[in-house]
Length: 483
Image 1 (cartoon, rainbow, N blue to C red):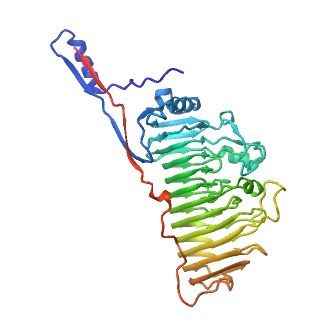
Image 2 (image 1 turned 180 degrees about the vertical axis):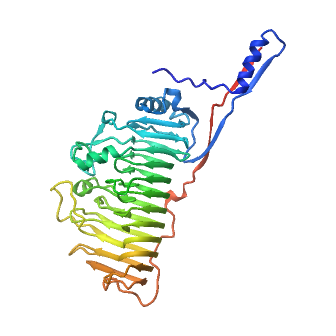
Image 3 (image 1 turned 45 degrees about the horizontal axis):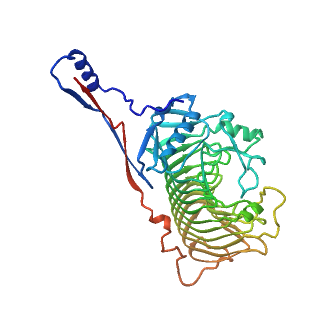
């Protein structure tokens, strides 16, 4: 492939006038005609700005929605990786529909989508290489032997930004959903974005639609900011989780709107004996200002794959509409590890099956090799300041026999239900409540003196990360005609 022509620009009207003057007055007295090419100034927030920039069309990209750009993306990013040690590089995806299969990112790099840009995921399986199963899962989720690489993929990276002016990434997932329903998959479906074994990651200000499976999957990574995403998939699409922080530390998810066929956010850390052996928890996670619609799943799920542990999750200012449950804990015998120190406040819920739901018998296992003695420790679960309307059941809280869920605290809750007689169904749990309506089950007695369940006052390190205001000047050129 030829080297990109960074000097090439489209001539403006003024430049064309200069050309005419030049042709007519070759021997005239005009010294020069100087024209400044019109510049498109873009400002965007990012963890780091870039010294170098290029446009996908510089590398031969064709945005007609039909021509494959897989090799173009791969070549462009490979070429720009040379600037990693010199201020990094940014690749602009301009207006158009850019069909592509899977491609890998590089460190000190920004992928920037123009607001009229659409990245279309190819439905040609030959453009999706296979990758090994995740070590904390032991197998693929759809098929045991392997999985397809994600559309946008990266591993062992640092300082990566995927952002834009609300440009779109379309996973064209119907092809994959149909194969899933027919049982025709030999490898696990691709995710839309997956970043592995990496740090200092930003994914922001994008519209993501119709992922083949999970949308955003940071795994074995740290120092992650995910914000301003609009994520949508049909509510009956299989396993289209919105955001899945998986064995990650120091993560901030904020200002996202998600419509999903599965959990809007699913917090994970590995599956049964594989997750126990890998032993990498998800911890120090904050989720705030989230809006979710998911009639068959949770706004936020903790688990069910939580065998590396989940600790210190802080969720606040949450809205769920027409969603099965709010913040749900999913686990089972064989998972081991823990879900502890969970803090939730200010939930506004409308049209829910359950407000509070905890499940100790979720069941699914990767294979028969799980340890039946590996019991999860579920403790320190705190909810406060909840308003809910049009609810079927206030709570279904089912711990594990001889392994109860403990330290549950619920305060300042008002639930308006449809009138089902049994609002609270509780087994194998322990905790307390304060100022909760309707009256909770006997396993959650109300204290005589009102109190608030705790929510940490300290800030997580990721909350203190301030994004920089980065400027991108495209076509910074001056055309000079000397006569």
